[in-house]
Length: 161
Image 1 (cartoon, one colour):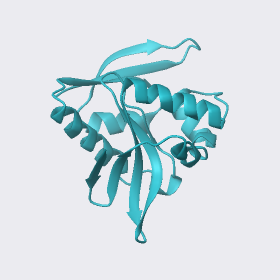
Image 2 (spheres, one colour; image 1 turned 90 degrees about the vertical axis):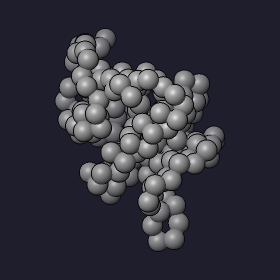
Image 3 (spheres, helix red, strand yellow; image 1 turned 180 degrees about the vertical axis):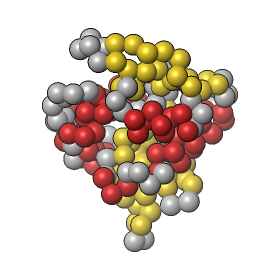
């Protein structure tokens, strides 16, 4: 499946090809800090493959691509699931440009087409201001604050569709 809006598209992930696109993203300490917490070691190819397979089991895993210079570039990944919506803009040059907001909007529309009544974001660390802001600007509301096994505080968000 492909969802396209302007110069942005979400296409269903393809294994094993997309594992290699994602490898540099999951070497990035900043991405790992915000998504998985402090002290997370870079992912090897097998870890990315396990993660992607799990995400495909629980939802729709997409590769985020941006059209530039007459071709599509893989710049991140996102999953649409009823209970979580992990998103990574892996390529630094594309962060902070509103792409995440556009992706979340595209997924909300997809969830509406599927007839879902709500979406949840299971875990955003309280120090992850960019993700918190992204989901709040997309209409999600904080519903809980919890502590993970390593003592790190995180928030849960929900959107009624």
